[in-house]
Each structure stands twice: as C-alpha cells, then as structure tokens.
Amino acid sequence: MTLLAVRNLTVTYPTRTGLIEAVRGISFDVGRERLGIVGESGSGKSQTGRAVMGLTPKPGIVSADAMTFSGVDLLKAGPAQWRDLRGRRMAMILQDPKFSLNPVMTIGRQITETLRHHENVTKKEARQRALAMLEAVQIRDPERLFGLYPHEVSGGMGQRAMIAMMLVCGPELLIADEPTSALDVTVQLEVLGILDRLVRDTGMGLIFISHDLRLVSSFCDRVIVMYAGRIVEELATADLRNARHPYTQGLLDCTPKIGEDRHPLPVLERQKEWAA
Image 1 (cartoon, rainbow, N blue to C red):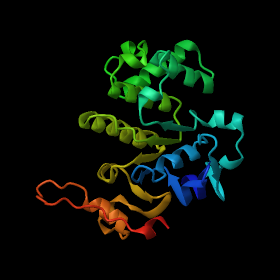
Image 2 (image 1 turned 120 degrees about the horizontal axis):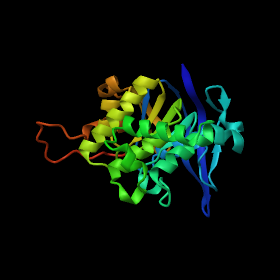
Image 3 (image 1 turned 90 degrees about the vertical axis):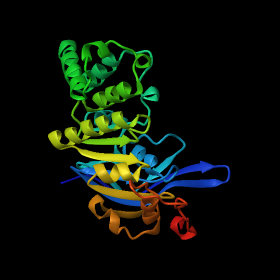
Image 4 (image 1 turned 180 degrees about the horizontal axis):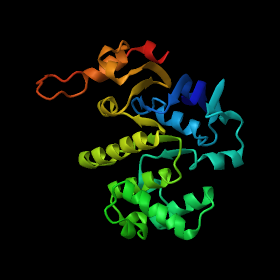
C-alpha cells in the first residue's frame, strides 16, 4: 500500500544571481516500509523531507506534478489541514534535538501538548500516554525525564524524547532526518533499534534521511541515492552491491571494510554529467 506518492518534485530558492534548484524533478513512492534517502551535504535530501512536510522555508518555492499522502493532496492543503496532518498522521524528527525542542518548556509538557492538540484527552490521560511513550523509547526513568528541560538531558536522551514526541499520536509516516548523526555509535544503535521496532509494531512508513550509506544499507528496505538535487539511483538495499551508477559505486568503494588494508584510500571521482 502506497502512503506517499511524489511526482516531479522541485524545490527552488530565488537569489540575486537567479534560481537555485535544491531539488530537481524527483519522483518516488513510500509504503509501509523503511526507505532510505542517501546523499552528501547539499544533495537535496533534507529539502525533500521538508517539502513533503510542507516545511520549506520562505522564499523557497515547492512545485510538483503530484504529491499525495494517503489520499490527501498535499499541494492543495491549507494551513488548517497541515496543522491536522503534522504530528497526528505525519511527523518529522529533525537532526539535532537542541534546535528542535523548546528550551523554556519541560520535555513532558512538550509531548503532552502535541497529544492534547490532536486528540480529545484529559491532562491525566495525556501524561500517562507520554510516560508510556518515553518508556517505549527506552527511557529508564520516564517520570524524571518528564519534568526536565532540554538543556538538562544528554544528546541521546534529547533525541529519544524527540522521537517520543513525534510518535505519541501514532503517525502513519515518519521522516527521520539524520536522527543519529549527533550521537555516539552505541546510542546510534539503540535509536535505530527503537525505530525498527516501532516500524514493525505499528506498520508505519519511515523515510530515513542520512549521508551514511553503510548505516542505511543495514537498516532500510530500499534506498534512494541523491546527487545535486536529483535521484541518480533507486534500488533495494539487498542489491546495493549491484549498483550501476558510478556515484553509488564510488560511495560504496569509499566505505571502510574490516580486514582490508587499502593504501591510499579511494577517492570519489566526480563527473560533470552526474549533475546535468
């Protein structure tokens, strides 16, 4: 079942020297699966996620032939419809919780605010569900974290709190933009385990945005590779070794391999036609 369908999506920004195309005519579908979007900084992957969520900052311009989510035409959605969709049916985890969580509100209040905005629940019920979700993302002492402010928790705890806030209403689609890039390796694995379990248990769709092809290949079902605002390759992660585009092949070749002693390390040789 297709949750999200995107056709010929373009995101542009006007500048003094003309229009800059951050995303250039990409198309893809997402079902109840884990779809990875991989690319280097500036490839357009985060801009794609923000466009899907209707969060492209001004003066950015989003255009597409079609962009539908579970029967809803996102191109025609008004402010009220977007407020209803975001948090309840679609959610997005941003890269760094320090910039995503409100510094003057406790973590518990931020989670319950999301829940009470979208559902008719009492303050007590909202608190109970928030604590249950904090426990679901493996917070050992959810009661304590509930009353803390964002600056009082570690990066890993803040990221888990962010995940809890985005998932407390049970969205059908979650977009995770570099959710583990600010975390150490052991916490990365824990966060990925949480997302994996939630996808399996709830059946939601997940778009996992990352620059780390190795991480995506071990976690996602399918992968989209972006370069200079375009999709250069799309394939199942099980078939990554059979990638045909030289950019994907170059990324794979630059991935460190245990047991191999390669000197000098390979360098990605870019070609002008990739960006054409």
